[in-house]
Length: 553
Image (cartoon, rainbow, N blue to C red; front, side):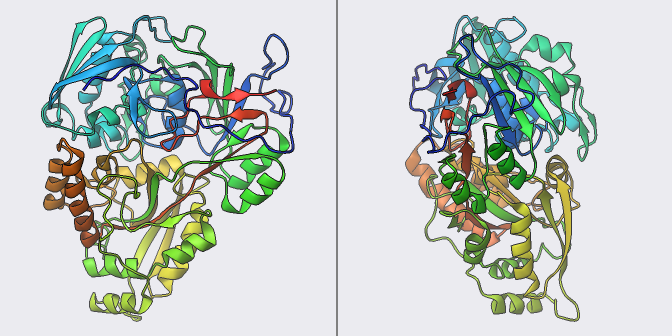
């Protein structure tokens, strides 16, 4: 295969409709926006986005959540990006690539690109980054840190499917895998595979990760020195308040109109809406379903992403009771997905029958389902030994002060599910955490029970959904199912779409019979903007880079 170059610019960008009422969001209204105006004084070039949380790390190698990726995509670029408005791979720092065999990829790189510290991007920098991640050990290699390398490359060092990277010349790098992986090229569009400055990584001790797997401590680099090739340069971060980026004056691509980006942390959905209405931010993601009509009526612009996601109720089989399939089936039967969607999720949301959306290869319309049946749930609990006198008691973990595309209102989702589960006699012990601590708890340890999480697909490949969830033993799910692991390992190496379709359809049935969790819904994520934002690059995989934002005033 040969793929040709595409720079990150406005081709194919989804346009944002301008609302009927124009609300000026000048720099003085947005507090810390600086002077923000261009030389003509006509356009305020500061773009303020209401984020639901801080980035977990400024080093994308240690990133696995949307808020971190949102910031990383402005600073960093990888070999592969996405076609605007889609989940499909497209050239980025690699202007083309060839695949001479099932495990070898030869990348031809863009020339004249420099990192933010002035050092050169070249094939040696590419190999440095790949070799660096494969060499992670200890806390750095834990599930709560280098999550994506571990999942996609199936481990580190000798355990990894990554074999080698060679710098054939300044502008050509060859990456070799130990075994075929059909999703390798799409996977490289993840921010976790961004190419970072080797000089900066070494200077600021990027691999000096402290703490424990449950409570890791970021390196000096990861706390304040991210250095990539992207259209924006890191300026500052004030945890709990904001992250500030400046336009890269030496960007190799088209820079666009935005000269400063401020990610203002506003954890509460209502507070984000109020900030938009007050003119202190230009836009925000994950609009609460109840706010859609009032914002539209007030003249704000609403943009929907295609629901390339899944919300699920995870079950940690290492927790008491949850290793029993009858218990897991009972929990599934106790949940009324339609009621959940109608009462607390956005309009247009559809119920999930499996752990991937219908658009992904291998979605199976005939999988085993667990339709709402509270009496059957009670009967299964009784068969498992749980009665009114001896009820099943489990911890229910969920995050607070955060919104995700698949989970816009976790507190409301929890409350809805709590009433349904308690109605069949299950006793719940609710435990809440802030977002970063929540991810560390679920992914880094075993002290959790049932929990709310989900996934927005990063690229269009079934391995990015079911392979990411269930391809290896993880702390989140707490089970060891060799048959499932082997099936997923075999499927990720298949070369044709037809082979993948058959294999993943069977795997989806296998998963739903095993029932490691309950897929709940595919929510529709909505963004809201001030009318001065005339174009925003909405992407189903959130590959949204702000040099592509257009502003009218």
